Image (cartoon, rainbow, N blue to C red):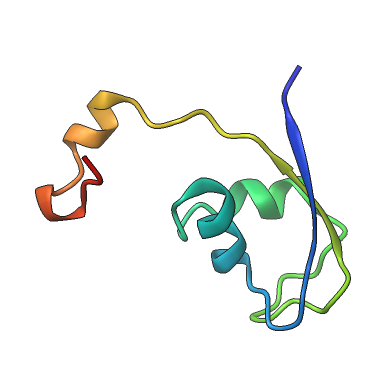
Length: 74
């Protein structure tokens, strides 16, 4: 069973900010959008929207090896 997080949006929330908060990567907005088809895609989300966010697998060493040295967190 996949773990889920539940998040209620706040004023000025955006998909990229939420992706950064949950996944540590502001570009991983697709899983959030795909799981929350009830939400209109907008630059800034309305306050009070209930989102379901599926827990993502952590990146592997192979993926990290493809990340430029200056961007690695190690």
